[in-house]
Image 1 (cartoon, rainbow, N blue to C red):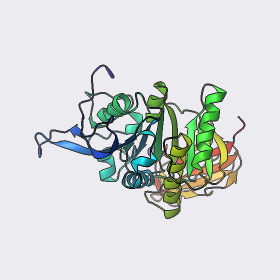
Image 2: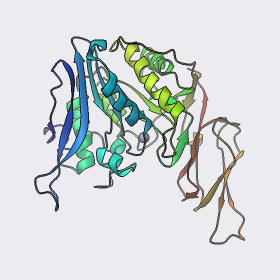
Image 3: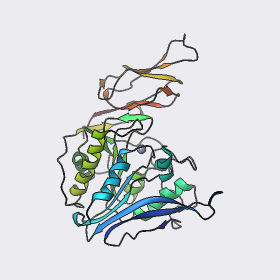
Image 4: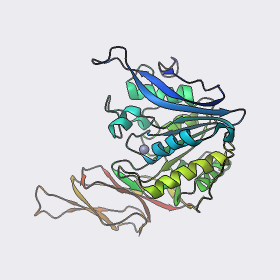
Length: 336
Ligand SMILES: [Zn+2]
């Protein structure tokens, strides 16, 4: 069903060859305007002898930009002599979505990070997931997937990962989070429906993962891009895949993100008026936002409240909202 058949993609580069190579993973795409056409998904490999194999991805959601910019620069600037092992870099993992400036694919509506393990016989998004899961991740030591808030959310720049089964592997994750050096880092618990992610696919293969939520709001900010670029180099040095210069990261505030009560959702359709900002410490029951009804403005706005004490690490970036849209999520200090 999934891994039983090989990926249909043709890769222009050879992951076993020494040095730096750039090219495309060709996604077969036969459509009305192009009978034998393919979608050119850019990919790079930088290899220098023995060492870890590290897969670096961004643009898993197409409208999350800092990681895509940072990985492009990494491809351009990294000297293979500074590398130990193999870096495989996929800067715009859901390439059709990235080219459209969208979270999801304009071709099939697919959310790549809800499409793993994917299928070689599925839509384009499912095929990309399958390619990552069966071609890039097997044999990798590390997979770093750089996300941001995208068009609908803003984050305090964060590094993150899921709680591991053993304390030793959780400590290893915490080492990666501290190395990346974002203002906050958090360890999450999987929400229902979030087990079809790239990181889940990697962890199922025994690959050590770490992700980020960099800024968001559909934009790139200089300070967050600086963090992404420096943090990526620190991570690569930490896992002994890079010997070039690094800058020292800042201390990170380690948080955990628990279950559904850490999240606030719009209770009704309307215009979202936030009542808290990123970085605020809030209390359970505190008003989080108002939903205004511009179709019946004489009606009192609906109130959304926080369900838990915590630090606001994520906030919706968009006014017009529908019932069920995520308005906030919180973090609380990591207790181990
Ligand atoms: Zn994302």
